[in-house]
Amino acid sequence: MQDFQSLEIWKKSHSLVLSIYKITENDFPKNELFALTSQIRRSASSIPTNIAEGCGRQTNKDFAHFIQMAIGSSSEVEYQLILAKDLKYINEETWKSLSKNITEIRKMMHSFKNKLTTQHS
Image (cartoon, rainbow, N blue to C red; front, side, top):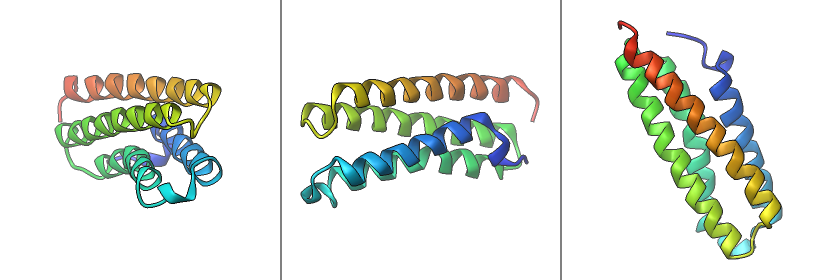
């Protein structure tokens, strides 16, 4: 069991969530509050939430499972940002920046998951 707040993947994913909340509050139309806004916030917050939950598990295998769930959530966020861009809720620059962050976080999570699965529980 480790402190999730000390993990770089948690810090970066938490920062992503804060960015998502900011853009959805400022840039998304109010009529999306219970639709895309809610979905993208849930998906984004699921990334650091799963990392935190995995940290509380007893085995590396269990932790790796939660990292995999966080990876899946990052793909959801990636799609939802594409949708937001295509609907013109966010501009190309914002989309590129957030997409780059998600890609970096996902690569870090894959690497971390591989380390967990190659270590003995």
